[in-house]
Amino acid sequence: MPRPQRPEADQIAAADGLDTDTIAAVATAAGQAGIGVVRVSGPQAGRLARIVAGDVPAARVATLRRFRDADGDTIDTGLVLYFPAPNSFTGEDVVEFQGHGGPVVMQMLLRELLLHGARLARPGEFTERAFLNGKLDLAQAEAVADLIAGASEAAVRGANRSLAGEFSAKIHHLEGRIVQLRVFVEAAIDFADEDLELLESAQVSCDMDTLCSELATLREQSAQGVMLRDGIALALLGPPNVGKSSLLNALAGEERAIVTQIPGTTRDLVRVPLNIGGLPVEVVDTAGLRQTSDPVEVEGVRRAREQGSLADVVLWLSDLSAAGEADQVPVEIERDRLILVGNKVDLTDLAPGRVGADNQPPDDSCEVRISAATGAGLEALTAAVLGRVGYQSQETAFTARQRHLQALDKAMRHLRRGQTLAASEIELVAEELRLAHLALGEIVGEMTADELLGEIFGTFCVGK
Image (cartoon, rainbow, N blue to C red):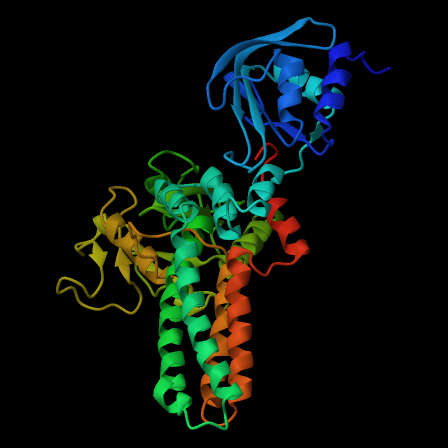
């Protein structure tokens, strides 16, 4: 049976004449904490503040209030913050109740708000409303989620730059350049019978080539941003007892994998998230690759090979102190994903570091010499990993997503196609420019399907 509503609630709702499309959710993480926040957004936010906290405080002033339920009993005592539209995160009236961060307290307060007309927010709905109300464009809205999920300081800084609009500004700059060219081309079509020589003076093909160069630069920067956001997978492969688990522990700076002299100790994948040069990296230790009849180890070898085919970078380890030929690298590992690592350099008279650098002789069986036991050569190894994926630590980097790269690639294809048609089919050039413009608009949400919006905001946490 529903709990009774306080008499004044119906009167206030009738007086306000507001609809019920107001959302509420716990905006802080689950679990116990010193402070918890329940957020409300929509036309009934002020009414709900009066019902639960007694009144609507002054705008943007933290005000101490007692939160009460429908029976007048105290739920909690805390701060109320009121952000009137349009000067709020969502662009709507927003109220935040900041109380003690116990999960039961938060749920009691949320239940009271739902009882009086709010509905539970969907994941990402607050940020979605900010986008729909023009407070953020789509790339900035995605940066909110990237900021929350940032796995390194560099990723957090990059997300902040995207949220501040740096990435969007670059997109809008390119859009402006395309619009200028579209205007010129459309004029050439409309006044084709007049002696304006628009196409000759505009040098359409040359202008499009310049646009393509700028777009390629942004595409490269965006690819860096994707790596900064998503990170990379780094697999450690090789025969047994070459030091894969020791290398994992050395990179992690602590004992994360069991190390013994017994071949076949590692039988399953061991995953450790790390930060290498500001780039989030998931390092995966694998079972030693060898022929074996042990069914458990056979499965471990299978998983190791599978991981080698999936990882962004594979470190193939060998033992520099062992005599004999180097073990064969599995054929499924492409050369552009592979780094040959010679371990246990401390047991030899060889120098650690990049082979072929600092006057060291080249060695086809090894690219980097290290000692997982002493840490020698690890700096050179991490530099080799970052170089293999093309990551450059930049203070100006911003986060980006795969869909951004796809849109940039689409725009590039249309520009290149238009460039080839500039000398003969000017009407088709205009169409290619239009399609390139539309592709860039997808990034910031100017031309975005509802299905894509649902997919994007569905990845957000509830309360954001």
